[in-house]
Image (cartoon, rainbow, N blue to C red; front, side, top):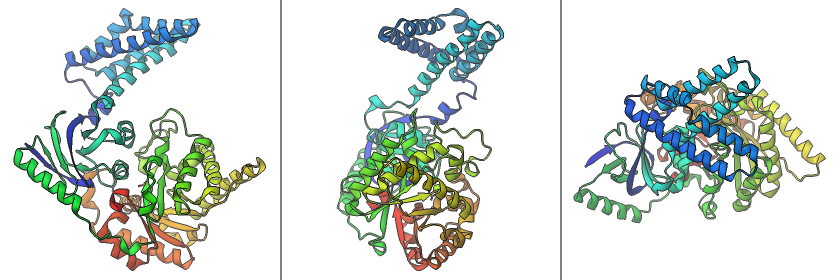
Length: 514
Ligand code: PEP
Ligand code: MG
């Protein structure tokens, strides 16, 4: 039996079968050397024949001859001796398959371009296509859990995009070896309500092992003995019976919930809370090859507002950047992504995508009690610029005779600048919402995704609370409400502090609400 202890990301008691996924190896494969050449050669062979099969299928299903011909050419490339030998040589010289594919792609692309022959130069795209298929096969092979059924995922690292790919329905529990409870992955896990721990070393765990995961106590047992199974079952039963008074009762009437996915809004959710205090809309943009268009977004927002039946729904405009990367909205190379294009800064790079979201929100506002909130605010000037864009969107809708409503707008207080300048900012918005996850990271200057830095954040959060105090005083001085939607809102031991400060509402994770 192996017993692991860890930090609790999401409580709950579950049992299941372990599925081990090595994310770091998958991600770094492009950079690192292969450790076992025969194993890599085997992977290469599997990838080549899988892509050839995929192409054969494309040829069979093609409805016109041109497409058939193109796929034929691509399949021929995978039979070409020079091409295959280059791939094999790269692997034999120590490259991983990923790396070998990239080197082969570069080599042949350059070779074809250098010929200056139009026909050959046009073949560069074919090389890219074939190499792209190989890479896609190699990475999808790492992530797929479709055939496994629901599992307890054991992984060295997990990104928000991975989580979306696995899907809540495939996950009974999660055990990660690194990270922090404040990362977006952890937040998303809590929103999914999947019991999860951050446990340090998980090297000894193997796929197929039986797992008993106690997310309330922070323990996980692998291949447990009979006595442990017996104790675990008893704890499970007791937990089912335990019904405590909610630690958040002081915020009765002002207790909202955070959601990341429209699917998390069950029919009964609004019976248990007073509304949605944070809808992280960026999750709608993850793991897809296109952007959600106006109609899609409009129907998502409208459906939630209709379910809310008059209760508040606070929608945050998409907050990408840092660990929340979206393939369709690339941000370029950044030395310090957490200090780079994040939140509203991204709207200057992608004004059209932002406008589409605003139009969808203005249209949905007709159907309920919507509030819009902007992430990563640092000044009142930024709010003024955004208001202009919002008014433009409203004007366009009016010209097109499309019904819309201008909802209240709020600023997230998640940078020290926003807290310090909250008197000015309060004059430009209708409410504040404190994002303690980022406010903590930026106040203590520690990366919220690196668990090793936990000890550098004062666990009594003195500095953050001092900034929240400033923002609360300024909010009230200007006659607007202030709430907290970061993870600190979900800590029962801090509710007393929030009432003392005069915080008007809390927005907590669904697991804390449960
Ligand atoms: C926060 O920073 O506290 C917050 C709510 O935003 P996110 O966690 O999505 O960055
Ligand atoms: Mg934030």
